[in-house]
Length: 154
Length: 287
Image 1 (cartoon, rainbow over the protein chains, first blue to last red):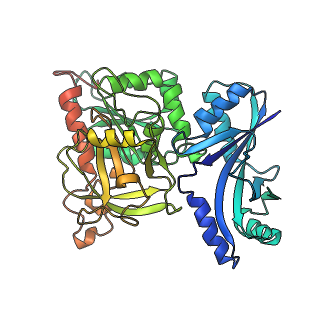
Image 2 (image 1 turned 45 degrees about the horizontal axis):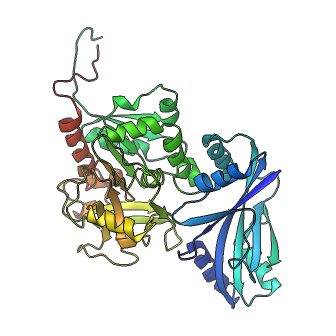
Image 3 (image 1 turned 180 degrees about the horizontal axis):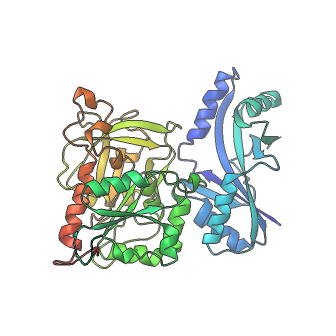
C-alpha cells in the first residue's frame, strides 16, 4: 500500500523556486506563464496508518512555520485550473532523499515503512498550450536520462 | 615515555557534533582549539549509544554543512535526532546553563529542534519547545556564498558576542537562510528580549535589501540567542575567519589583526572557564 504526502509552501510566502521557473520560462521565449508553485511529493510503501501518516507529515516532512501538507493529493484552489507537472526518477535510479526519509521515519519510531520515493509536482498557471508545458517540462524540469514526467490539466 | 607525571589543562571541553553531511566540523574544532578549548569531534551515534556523554563537555557546537544531504529540508533530520534520540542529554545540557552554538546548518538544526528562540530558558529550564520560527529558502532562489557585514542591533545577553559591538565581516554559504517567524508575537518577544544578536548590514552598519541581506531574512536577522544568551545560532560562518589570512583582501590590509570570527569562540571559552569549570578542578589528567 502506498501513502502519499504532499508538502507545499504557505501561500503568503515567496516560492523562490517557482519564481525562478517563471524567469526560466521567459528565457524559452514562452510568454503567458503567470504563476508557478512547487510541491514536494513523498510516497511511502508499507503499512502506514492514518495517524502515522499525519505524524510523518507534521513532524518530518513539513516545516510548521513555512509549509503545509496533505496526506493524499492536494485539491482545491491551489491546483484548480492549473497545469500539473509531476517529475519523478525512473526505476533503478537512486533517490537519495528517499533514504533520508526512511531514516527520518525510523527516528520517529514508526515501523512498517518498507520504501519511500519522492517526486516534484509543479503547479503552473497562465495561458499555456500543452506543447508549451511539454517544452517547459523537457527543458527546465526533468532530466530525461534519469527522470520522467506526466502532464495534466486540472 | 613520560610516566607518573600529572598535568592539568584547565581547558573547557567543546563537543563538535558530527553526522553524515556535516563538513565544517574540523574548522569548528580548530577554532575552539585556537581559542583555548579542548575540542572533540563526536558522532551523534556515539552519544546515543552511550560511548560519549554530553555531561563531560561544557560547549556543544553544531557545525555547518549539509546534514543528511539537507534532504526534506535543511537540518530537519538532525533536528529530529536531537529532539528524539538524545533529547534528555541535550535538554539537561541547556538547562545546566552550558553553551551551545549552531553555525549555518547548525543554526537551522537548533531552530527546527526548538532550542531557539528558547524564550523560557532560565536556570534549570532549557526553554525548548515547539518550533516558532524557521530558516527557509533564500528569496534569490540561489545558494549565496560570499562575505557579509554584521552588526549587533542592541545590547544582547549573548555570551558568545560579548563586547563585539563593532561591525564584523564573515562569510555566508547557504541556500536556506531566510529567517521567518510564525507570528508577530514571536517577533515582538525576540526583539523585546534583545535576542536578536546580529543583523546583515552594509559596511557602514545600515540594513538594506538584497544583496546586503543575502537571503531576505525578516528584519535582516543573521543570528539569535535564547533568553539566557547561552544558546546562539547564526547563518554566517565565524569558524571560517579565525585568522586574518582567511579574508579575501588580507593582502591589502583589510583583514584586521585577528579574524573577526575568533572572538566568538574566545568569548565562549572565557565564559566557560569562569562559569562552567569548577574552581580548582583537575581536567584531562594524563600519565
